Length: 544
Ligand code: B12
Image (cartoon, rainbow, N blue to C red):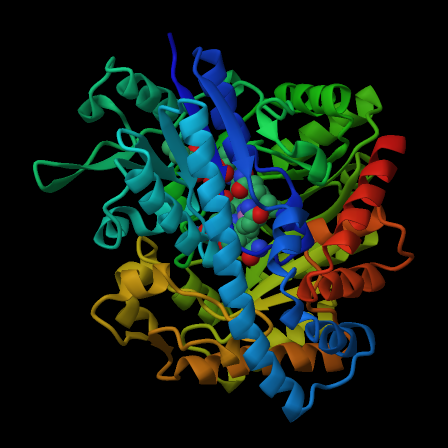
């Protein structure tokens, strides 16, 4: 018979252009359900329509002139602008709440009208999490008998702690969902018990039960994600760039990263299978822009797939994450020729002491330097990410990182303050890494944490942990200062790998202009401009 379901993604108010990339995680779940005769539809609310609805409130119109001043004219905001922004930020929150309430009501109506048996919600961090919890609450109230399942990145990080703040999900799914989602649909049909389903957390007789974690052994056997318009509703409004799930897991066990827990040991698809996906996405959807999903795509996969792409003479463009040590012998020219436009490397720090003591990362800085040089020389836009201030950071380690970046001059440097997540090595032993947790309900306060749109981190509500004895305001200000110094040294600190690639398919001549314009459009809620942007990228992609 099969079940009838909805897969929903509500990631909040769209903030960056890549939020409009289709969600391969939900698309693969839909594909697995279809293969097993369960009917489903994806409702992905990360669209320009959502942006438009939020900014329909005319009292938000003043945001436009401030956005123009900051992103286009590059002028400093005045104290009056900051006061105005505070007011506008409050209004925006209220309006966003109203819009997601409307969306929630629409989903409830759809559930009733289409006799939906169950709803699966992808849980993201940020404002999306709040709205998703509200959706679950309303669905439970308005649609008696409906089964609700939650999964995705927020469950990977917070696991059963989510049950401390909501009663509305029947089941939460951590890790990989392909086998689990089909088993859950079978459970709804009464064909399976929850106890026998892997990767789930549920309540039984008042106790929380967690079943065993199971990884998919052979990724080559997974079906292709389903992007057909009758399943992935609204796909025509998304950017024609697909995420390719080429590998999962990681060989490195970095102390700050969730991947060792979430995706376990390294597994990879065959290059032939990856290329088959590229070809099918090209022929079925006219897509030839891709981003590899793997948290640390292995060098052999990058090179062997590049060789296959070159042999077949495929006209594609893509980006990926890379690991310096892994990539030291890669022929970057060949990789570039296969269509790789940009690689994102996690350096974290250029202090050997911090790499070892704080990050548990085995990167030789001379290797990192050579890789950055070779990658840039091959014409690949090289993005390097650092965590600053890191645990144990001091003047000497700061200088080491700053000097390294100024010397190697990556095309873009992304700087973040350290995020402390449960399940990671940092999260399990915060005091050993110089973190001081300032609350007894850490997980609950971090999982429901809301950023303050329109403002840089130092204006946000303080996160409840100190780093090296410093408060949130202090370390967020240090992160900003570090960025500023990099800018003063002529380095760019905003451009991600996928944003770079998208810029190459836009009508703008320079990546900088593309980034500034789109930040302005999104900040000011100019949905029509964003639609035009997506349209012109998609037209270019189709033509080429
Ligand atoms: C590609 C990517 C994206 C793509 C989306 C595609 C996708 N699959 O997520 C885009 C570019 C749109 C994106 C956007 C964002 N991303 Co992103 N993204 C990634 C990235 C690099 C790979 C994800 C991936 O493809 N994984 C493989 C697929 C198969 O896994 P998956 O999507 O998680 O889905 C599986 C399971 O989670 C589970 N599952 C998922 N949903 C559900 C639902 C149910 C009911 C069930 C049962 C199971 C289930 O089953 C799926 C199949 O196994 C990861 C980092 C990484 N390497 O993991 C970050 C990551 C997931 N992103 C992250 C973030 C923060 C964001 C943004 C919020 C960024 C922002 N704007 O600030 C936005 C979200 C808004 C949105 N969706 O529009 C964080 C998530 C943190 C969190 N707790 O939410 C991550 C972990 C990166 C990081 N460390 O910061 N992202």
